[in-house]
Image (cartoon, rainbow, N blue to C red):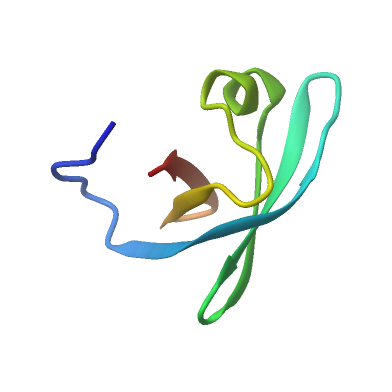
Length: 71
């Protein structure tokens, strides 16, 4: 999967350094050169994206939301 274009200007490339799994939503902590970014996403999304500690991702920050894209 690759991202050709996206409208979110605040993008932080990094690696997942921690995942706190919950039954419905989970917390994903991404380590970036500028520090850590934390996102709360559905546990289903974590499973579908096959996210795990060490995965290369991009944290996409828009308003009050942080989305995760696996690289």
